[in-house]
Length: 328
Image (cartoon, rainbow, N blue to C red; front, top):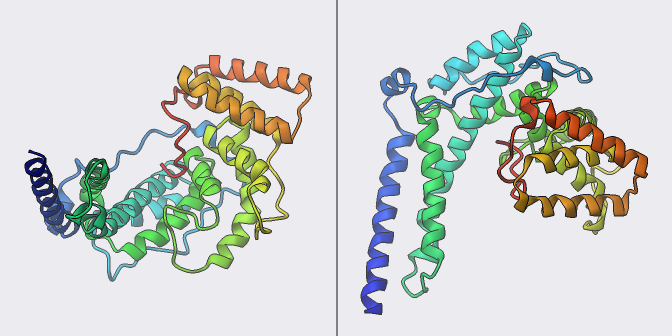
């Protein structure tokens, strides 16, 4: 019976691998006419709130990294070309949309690249290894990659990965400069590599740029109570406990402790009861290293309660703050 069950699991596994191989080929090489005519898989752009525009960072648009017109004939390229022109004229929504679409296509290409290595993962293809929970982990990861590819295919299929990466990095910076909070959190949280999984040279330039803008963007995010920026600020304020060697980012201004505490308090109002202990732990660790006066704590509590009761979209409920993903 056990032998039969193991054989059945292996058959299911190889069927999954075969399906995923067909899946990745189809979604990576979609017909151009289908890409141009289908819009249901495009990443939806949420309405943006002009009230979150930056007041501290330079809002000028930088568009030195244009898409590669020779290698790219995708719907993403058509959108990016038009959005860059609008963003250069000061269109806030265009800057945000360019970032969101480029992020979606960056994740699309990462998923396409990861699929072959997943389907050849020896944890699940080696018949001598017990399957236990490996098959379930494999299925979950495969499902995640397939969802990314399926949801972004009509926008991203046929796009040039190098063009997408360059425009993604540039649009992330520009969207953060105009104060779009998800981009602010992605920029400060991803670090000078500017995730997701970004590379492609110019690291020295990005490091210099990051050291200049990270403190500005972090303060702006903290003043608005953004929970991801607060998580980043907490990490920066407490990271020396876990570092054995000096960092190339040493010497930059540290985040404001009071603003970090205040943003974490606001986050407590937004999470389910089961996640409050996690935030309590962060706050206790923060004040253990950077003490705050009782007056400051009381002032922060009043602000957090007032902000939460304001009904602002910035204080919508959060489902999970323990598993941090800066670039969403």
